[in-house]
Figure 1: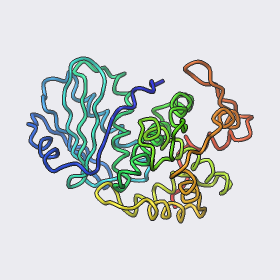
Figure 2: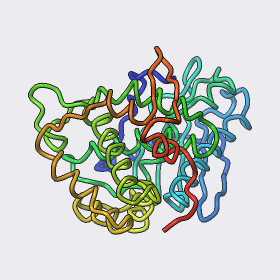
Figure 3: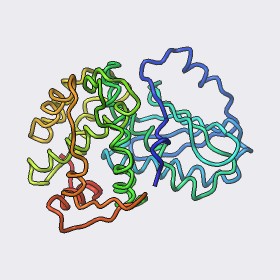
Length: 311
């Protein structure tokens, strides 16, 4: 299970040309192109000889991209430039995402990283998920970060690289950070770390479950997100109202707009203990036990199952 404090990758849509130029100017000693249906990813290594197994690293990139493409029905951008910078030791950190003639991601990878480190990584999927949402005003950074926080484990589970138990253990550990605290003024007006990442993720979880309840579990937030991507990705900018309306139009129920109107400028408590109980999730230390006889267990299982069709 990933520790909550690992959710530290940051991204800004409104980044200066100077910052992008610095990344663009970094010398690339090795370059590979990974091709997906309708998309290509150029992987640039700033120090080619620093990584002990280049094929292992490229497999990690491909696996992450396929997880995101599977969740959204396609990879979010036609062209992605991925700059991999080495760091001492193991693990992946420091992911940042920009729009730049497609997408641009810079991420740091430990030169001693093992196959297990690459398989367990969540950060690259998180960063790639940012590519699928239009740039929003600063007040809605919670949706940008919260959506990536929410979608990442689901995309990996649907791709078969993360267990259902691991998804819910992650949510059980992280979602309490997203609850409103004293002085909270709603998602748009409370730019704390907890509300930005996990408050946004909690919004997505509550919306997903409500969409499924109102549609007889036929469709969920994933279908809304695919429709939003069809309107524009990170290379575009937009306002949250029309973006959420596009998602609601795809699902046929106005859940996103209704939830946003309630959560945007006031604290709304969520009974997480009751929610976990109804979904059939029993926390057990750092893991969870799943019960399929709970009233909403069928909704829980649907979230990690690949969609049967697209809208």
